[in-house]
Length: 70
Image (cartoon, rainbow, N blue to C red; front, side, top):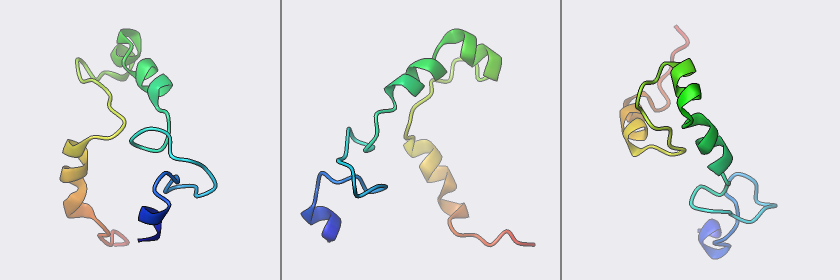
């Protein structure tokens, strides 16, 4: 509830204001990782990099807080 009251505050560093939908500007990283030579070097083919993927988030839901100590 506190974060809703101070709505434009960065959730990861409350000393800063939130910039964009993820509270940080990832545009330079996205531009770099989506360049063809970089994608070729990483071997990702035509997969486009996105800063926040609901597909990845949904796939990781089953691993949430799973104890992997063993």
